[in-house]
Image (tube, rainbow, N blue to C red; front, side, top):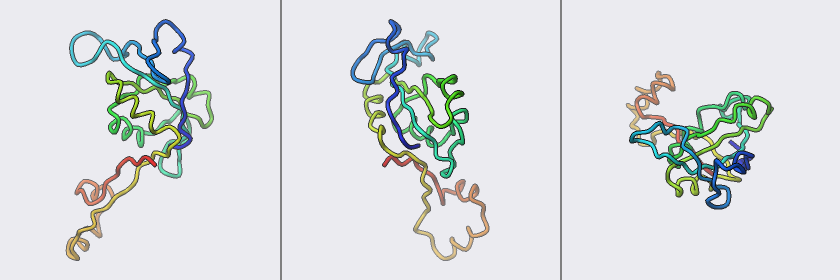
Length: 157
């Protein structure tokens, strides 16, 4: 993901949302259906970004790839609260997503990726003996990942 910017959605100007601070709003949690497990309200912010197909990301905003999006959700303890399907269907390169959390601090931290580059980076176990290296030579990347020899992490630069 590159060219990450704030998106000021028109919906934030309605009575459904309350501005909490710059670029963060409070609104109804779309996942709340009564009971425990979810808060009735959620802090939200919206971002735009471009995917990088050369890094294995989606080709168009209609096809937003799972990675590094899933890594962002984990890193900042947020969820996608609006997919902006119509905007993404109309756009050739800019993706639109709303992110939310019941914890204001999570959304504040998420905004730290604005202007940065976020991608999945491949890591590999360095401390392998010659015998282990030989054993793993014939394995596929998927098998190496299952063994914990290689893994991917979300990087924010």
